[in-house]
Length: 306
Image (cartoon, rainbow, N blue to C red; front, side, top):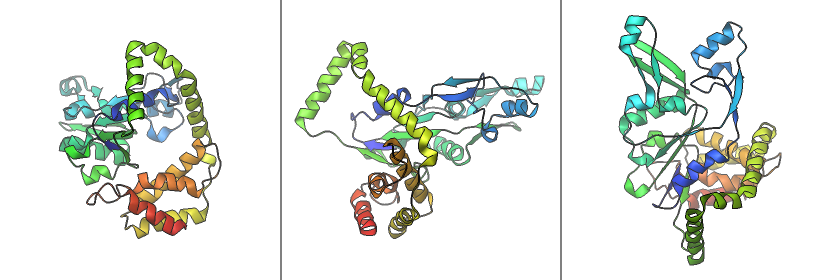
């Protein structure tokens, strides 16, 4: 989750991720981007084909970023069933929604703190189970819905449901730039983009391709990253002494530290990696307290890691 002032580039940052993320292998023609190597998370149609012994044609595809608008209806998000066709033809005529399109991709909710209650319930169910279940007139359809949920918003415009807040593994804060020279540079860069979008992108191509290779390499090496037992204990001690409910924050902090070590090209997590990620993992540990609790988290980190 990314929270901060209006006009600080939150939405632009999220939508730019699509150019950085690596491609994924999918089953050709599958509406849910099923992974050919993971039968547990496949759509029912694809799983039936595997059971019959069919060879599945596969291809690579870009990870998509799907926008979930605030005013979307539940049918638009979950999908629809053509009841008439289902009853007369005996087939489950299903039209996928946004959750299906975001499967194995990114589902982005701008102004997430203004999201309608009924959509919050839908996202909570899908995020918890990895499946979206649609039931209409006694007809039930389930499909895989494993997506990265990203939300952004301005905390001054409303608070987020505690249940939904807890589903975000990490919480980033974005502030307005105060340095005049940097503000001028941002304005000039925007003007340069408006004059020549193609040339602007080209000027950053080499830097962007380097970052793409770095991310792809980190993803490939992530499984071999080690984190010492002593560091794991200290992470959990920080969580325990901050009275963090549940174990989700412990898990997220371990994962985030490993991801950062992989991004830096190392095979082992250091205390510095943990120091970098743990404020983002614990900042929103208690929705009833102030979100801006970085100082408390950092103080506790240095006390435990001394």
